[in-house]
Length: 331
Image: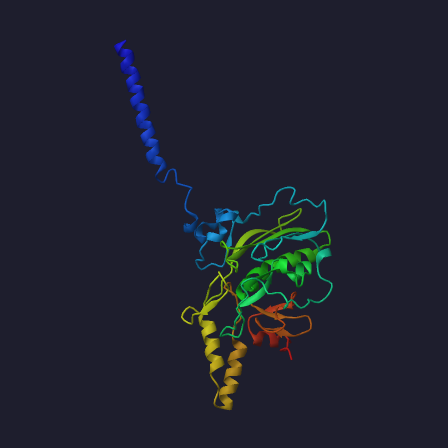
């Protein structure tokens, strides 16, 4: 009987030690704690982040980041072609904010007329201002771009987005889809764009964009784009903003200084004109942003007809390149 009690006591002690050891490991790196407060989420962890945590992300210098390893989260039903091409927009919420845009894109949804006037729409947080480089801070940003579905002054499809969010970040993804759809009338793309707000703020912190081409993987992405503008501090609660010259990119500082400086001689004017033609308009990857239209006219970012030129024939980095290719400035 004594041996049996000793054996039971030994087993009990071993189990107690095992429980303590497991608890220690669980609190350390081998078993990481997955209950990290959402306020501590950073962009570096975004590949594995859930969609409901996007609002808590903090911009860390990369405007477009992958979500869920860049794999769209559509179900089998979401990808069904049973209903053909379609588009649907979520209702405005209690603050009058646009909430979502879903579609099965196809050539049949693309516009057949020129883009209409959308100035009647004032999205939540619309407190626009002109930047030192001549651009305006905000655009009426389409969730589903006009070139994809032909929507004009649809309040459910427009948000207050920075010019940097609109172009080049969203535009490049939209152009990939646009090109794919135009290759074949049988091409379809399941598309979803969701503005991400933090609590009751009027301006979205960013947009989540997901797309998947049906029948192949030509188009496939799941990303989050921060609604930021270099050199500008945005109050997302109401859309007001402050321009910080210290944070402004050097190219914009140069543009701002150039606008404030008047050449004193004809030679100086000619020099400035030559410099302007060599000024580069590029994104962070070095891609040209000047649009060359089918009518032989080039359009600079922020200019009157830039956003209306939805399917440019060519892209250029400088005015000099555009002119050398036979394009002229708009009158």
